[in-house]
Length: 154
Image (cartoon, rainbow, N blue to C red; front, side, top):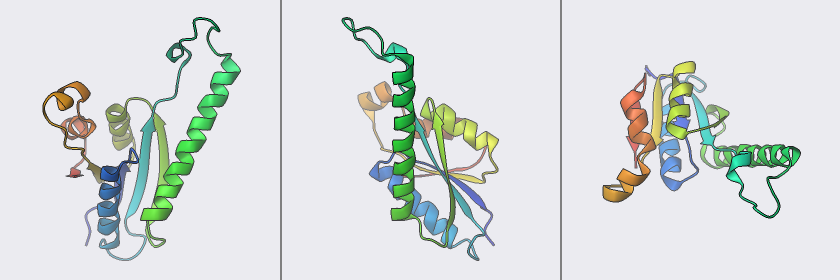
């Protein structure tokens, strides 16, 4: 019997994240009868704000232009999530898409606390040294503060 019934799988659409998704799919398939284990595929992105733009000659984009740009970005991310799921998740595995906006480690943790998840399955890029110090690690931050177990792969 599988102790994991609902897996949270964050993705940034990298190959490392796709590898973690493949592992989560394998866990779901091996979890018993079809439908016993559910995946939630989560993507966290940042939407541009008016302060992001720097057009000294033309000024800041009109609010309706910014809103339209944000809608288009969310639609693109939604399509990318659907495409990834079509490519990596077989039909017998139940999954849900989830999009959040904000700082990835923080939003992954918010989602982990808000949902009914048993496990977070995520990849790490394995940066070390200066690159790790400057960029930090989303996975490391999630590992330190996650309210549930985290399975990390790379």
